Length: 113
Image (cartoon, rainbow, N blue to C red; front, side):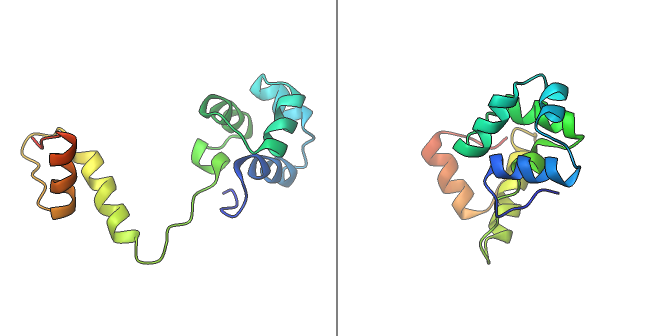
């Protein structure tokens, strides 16, 4: 998997280098220009579409291409609750009792099914 401490463009370069590839190889496979890959590394800007294309070229997921953002210590439980709420959103019979989620849903006008 990609390095979580690198910006997405630098992560793409690191992933490419671990395979021993020049910039031309993944650029050709992703149907993007070598100059775009170079710009991504320098500017640290990577669109989801280009990240997906590069991921396909490298045989990786977008998450692996972009790297994972580190989760602050103690936030794992809140992140798990958020992921669960997103998965359960709109599923009949799934009630949310988490006070923070209920407050956010009232503020945003979202109602749980």
